[in-house]
Amino acid sequence: MMAKVQVRELVFEDFISSTEIDQAVKKVADQINRDFEGKNPLLVAVLNGSFIFAADLIRKLTVPCEITFIRYSSYEGTSTTGFVKQLIGAGQEISGRDVIILEDIIDTGITLEKILEEIEKINPASVKVASFCFKPDAFQKSFNIDYIGMEIPNNFIVGYGLDYNGFGRNLPDIYTLVK
Ligand code: IMP
Ligand code: MG
Image: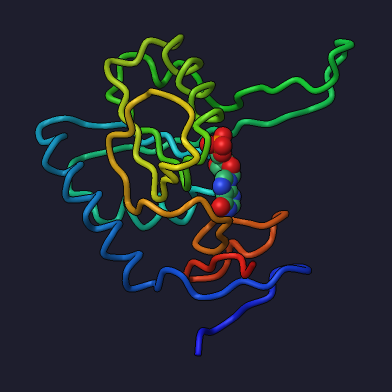
């Protein structure tokens, strides 16, 4: 029998165990350690979802590295078009660096495409993307995702930093919505 959890009003079931998660993070870390040998990458973690992936990944990196955090926030702007989105935290420290953007999940790719545009404006030396989860069937964009922990079907998941309406990030395993 599958273990089930309730997050707010929705029921989710077991999908990816913490053991499998750990193996996937290790795989990504091994690739980064190999590709960035002799370099000092700057990890740029996208809050909130990637905080657990970032914390696990950085402890498996052996290349000398730094980390910083950005978030893409929406707020009610003064323009008549309503909501305006702004990237917070992407400062000049990114300029000239070998950047690795860390995401919890890439779904349509719309969010990360906008983040990549903003990061490129600051002129990093190079930009790579590492996402713990990737939904290939939902992806609508063409940018390259350099490091992927897990490819998953186009279903809604929670746990390991991923939320449903803000809840469920604390779950050590990943759960998928029961349909
Ligand atoms: P995208 O712009 O469609 O690629 O969506 C990216 C963002 O949507 C992620 O950073 C997550 O915050 C959220 N997201 C997409 N799929 C899921 C999911 O299955 N569970 C929780 N959050 C998700
Ligand atoms: Mg997110």
